[in-house]
Length: 419
Image (tube, rainbow, N blue to C red; front, side, top):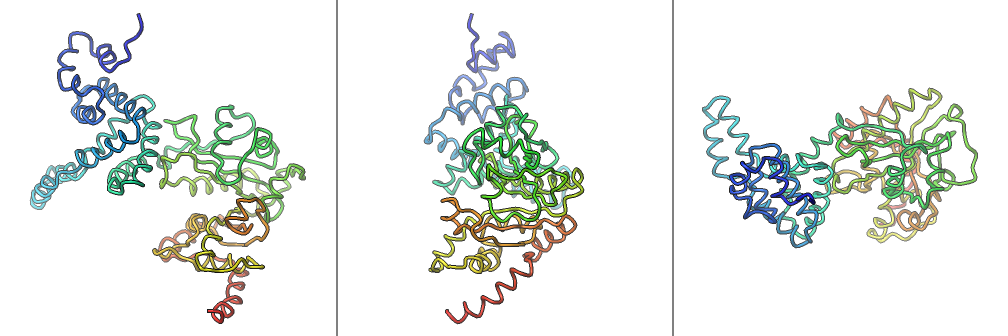
């Protein structure tokens, strides 16, 4: 006989026919097919096995829901699974003169029930990956309804705990990596597109090319982030040279520089949960231990906001783009006083130095449209990373190489005179 895969069938197999009527009568029969009511039931479920089955059903219903159904579910999470302010006030009042138990009661009252709901949903099969996908859909819904923000805050809080550095598994990606992972490297590459398997082989197989990724034990077949590395002599000044099919292949022991030329986040549902800083620092440390001949660790990075910023400033396309790029990277700020360019904000915040600006470094259509072909070397000096990170985090200080500061000082009088 075919297996009954309905919620009722799975629960009957778990608890047996004798207990099934009592369990099914506790609101489950009327809740079937309704992810909101099933979520309420899940919060009161006592058995681990039955709870996992209900969690699986909720996630399955969300996976098959259309946009309207998802929007309705997220609205219910906001309205029906929020804290009770009266309970919070009462618990806070009791905690003023009470003992440890009253503080525990305050903590419980202050946590939205949806956080416990997410924890219980995470007991379903493959739940962590499925909740990451739920958050991707939530981020899309958030664009249309900003009032869903508290739900994202709660889910992001939990995902940051579940995906903290202690759980991340580093791995080298090479030409012997299973094909299902390699296919995802092609699909997830976000900086310099990989057109086909031959192009991927050029990035993985040669001895002077490396690729490293982070994985999570709950998602062993899904890279979270990966970085592509070229071993070179000296700083690379253009992506065309790095990715050229006809090029000199360098023995790793002859290289003195590691160039991080592409960093790609793979999971849209983990946006805002940063892995890049951990990955770059670990890869740099691992390469330094493996290849003591390496003296420099640098990126060759895009400048995705340069052309858009220049247009907003009503600046004409310059003949010399380097002064314009220096001004943008160092002086253009967000309202919070951080570098406006997202890539600069990432690397400078990680403790790198804005080291060199390269013209004609990316002659692709995308490179020309985003940055007039400019790319940047951010230099990671291993013994200065932490101090620079602390200076950036504490005072907003950015490390800028002297030649770039000289360019800015020479260009400033001209800008002042033209204003």
